Image (cartoon, rainbow, N blue to C red; front, side, top):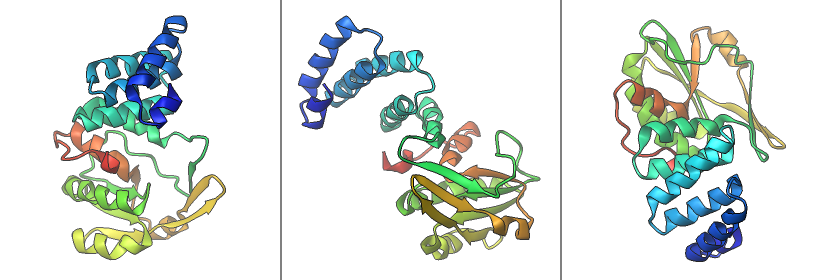
Length: 219
């Protein structure tokens, strides 16, 4: 089934997956293939049911959660889609994000009016450009804000954000499968007292009644 999906034969992949599921009805990998094939064929209800079943079997499976996030966000089902999108933060077999020297608490649901929020960089340059509009939307809710972004985007972010927002270039490097961000500069600045990843701002805004205008990562 997976091979058929990769060759573009969604109907064949669905048939193969459904046949295999008769013998292994609780196989998350088969359910995932069936879900993607059904989605490509336009049967969104069947796709959602298959992914929901797979996730019920393996609720912490990052790949399954991200597959459902992609599907739901493409359909504008923001709440569950964005909650699933948070699973991008879990390490996978090919990449792990490490943040050295970031000892602040991560923002959960605190009122930000008396806080100074550090928004940290993640993903690629294109994704950070898309996340910029979320940073702009969140700024009025914060007592103070510092934003970390790729060095090449610092001029754009500074032009786009109020002058009161501090924009800093990410100090980042790649170490094998680890993408490392260093925050030695944070101890010198002493302003931020809480932090959040850029890609999580859309969920936080939705929780505060600000409806998303597009999926993250261009889904």
